[in-house]
Amino acid sequence: MLSRSEGGFAPTRSALIQIAFVLVLAFVVYEGAATALAHMRAHHIPYDFGFWSQRAGFDIDQRLIPYSFTSTYGRAFFVGLLNTLLVAAVGIVCASLLGFAIGAARLSPNFVVAKCAAIYVEALRNVPLLLQILFWYNAVLKALPVPRASIALPGHIFLNNRGLFVPWPTFSPLGISIPVFHGFNFSGGTKLSPEFVALTLSLILYTAAFIAEIVRAGIAGVPKGQGEAARALGLNAAQTRKFVVVPQALRLIIPPLTSQYLNLFKNSSLAVFIGYPDLVQIFTGTVLNQTGAAVPVIAVTMAVYLFVSLVGSLAMNLYNRRILGVAR
Image (cartoon, rainbow, N blue to C red; front, side):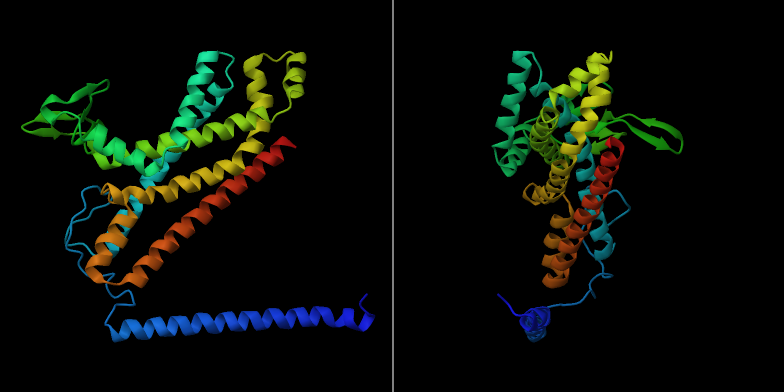
């Protein structure tokens, strides 16, 4: 047993140990950074952001903001970032809808529907995502017909080996631009590149399998007595799910769902394997190769992924807290 005097010194000794650890850690980080900086200076490796405003000299096929080969590396960074956010946004929305539908199907009393949903989940989540991306890109989309023999889908949508052509709104004049075959390719509307379609479709199908299991577990985690009590009060099956089961299931679904959203965002970096111009492919690929500024380029890219992940996690935690407050 510690004496009173020994117990009084314990907090002070613990504080001194923590201060010493922090000082040692700071010294190691400083020495490492100084050594790396000296090495880069000796080998003339860029270590600052002087390249940011320099001319990029390369073009990017898919872009959401104006960009040309005369634009700067900084502009290329934002083009890649927006392409990454586009894939993540479309993927999260579509994967959520598909995942919730399959999760509900897993609990269906219909034997065929439940088994088909189970087969989908087991097949998709046990195959590496990279293989699925390569499958959709090389085995499916590249094997599509040429533009002249495009597959016509409802709504003036056309699919061929150059991508998916869909109608697109115009604002000057106000209307809708419809893709029309002219010469050797389509004009009008907007084009979704095969790289974008393959990457987004793979992320949706893969992530939906995990979301389906989260939804199934969340709904199954609601006590059966809750549903029985709702029906005893006169609610029908749809009202019971809407007002009783789903609100309580969301408390179990939101935390693991947040992890799946963050995984989808980070998995979008696999775009580099099929050449989709996302942040990693543009900034840590083309820009890094041209400038040689490895440390600032990779540090910025890592900081972007970290920042977006933390903001997304914070938003989902706030939403989960709101759900908990409503459910009380």
